[in-house]
Image 1 (cartoon, rainbow, N blue to C red):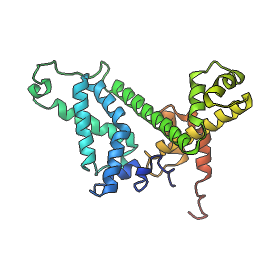
Image 2 (image 1 turned 90 degrees about the horizontal axis):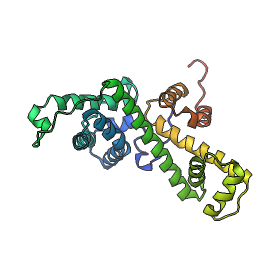
Image 3 (image 1 turned 180 degrees about the horizontal axis):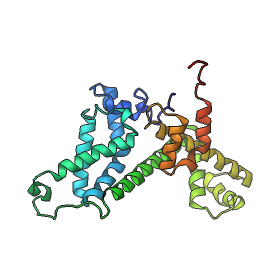
Image 4 (image 1 turned 45 degrees about the vertical axis):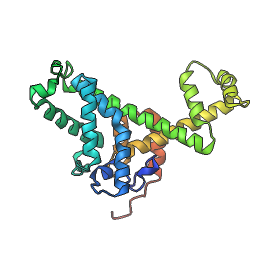
Length: 255
């Protein structure tokens, strides 16, 4: 089954994150795609490394090393058969941390003889939770960015409406209409607000689902639902998932 197209057009020629990582060539398409991939998950990578080494400077250095490996195509041996893309990246980072701790103690401590960094108190379980939180945050950030881009391109105030709803959970539709109208430069009704919020949530769910499908090789409704549940994002994408499944080719008799 085909995945939804990635929200960033620069990735269009290389349709999934697995494809980008495995594309070791030095052509401009591959280079641009790997650069975008570095930008896409830099925050999650550095947050994970910072939780592991407890030193922002060291974490930034290790994140840069990871980015260089990715940009140079050193991770081209990645295989989607090994599982979810986020688990693969986490595994690469763990190997990188293991290599770091095998360095001579003097090299780890640095010129100021700072104490050797240690992992979090409850070890890998805490790091795993931090990785999931960071990955989830980056996915949500990218969905919001896609919603902003859609608003700028179409003039539909989907991002403004949804952000206002998120920031004012205690307000009812008439109050939202009263306060949101002047921000949009128009007079709006409570019914308009309800419909606009519904459309904005649907669009946000579509963008978020596209981001997640981009991390799964040959995604199915089941694998997408599982990943959404693991990341505690299913609530945002239930309608989008139903729509996505309805658009997939139906298996032919005898397949």
